[in-house]
Length: 215
Image (tube, rainbow, N blue to C red):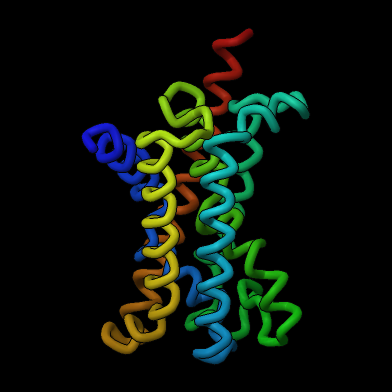
């Protein structure tokens, strides 16, 4: 059981600060202002499922996929960091309340379903930072090779726990806004948007630094 717990804590502790479900929930809410509570609940479930698949896929096949296309992790960091930085910039400059700004994903069923993966899952929830960290975890840990082991079970449980937190945070994002108020929520959203922009810049900088070392 110690192997299972160690594997769980390693994956969960590495991913939670990056994914940050409570903070991401405010950005999710900013993108879905025009959606109903039921539509937002459906979106939360879709994002949670997509996030689980991305984390598990990155753990076990992420490195192989990057190698197949000749993409290095530094290149993933730079490209993904640009996407995150742009998303943070758009949220930071969204109209107050984000009801008519360009961050709105729309309220039609088709637009909501298409937005569940991009931009709500990628890059806002489990973006390139999450993928890069997860691939790094998967390349040097006992759960790197899929199989019936306690280490693998612990990693999968950690991915499931992160996904469950994403669902709960996103599902009740509007309730959190009701408790905090629209003004405070908007201020918190912009704070996290600034942090998202900074995270994007940091990922780009790390990618460039790693590229420079390889020259």
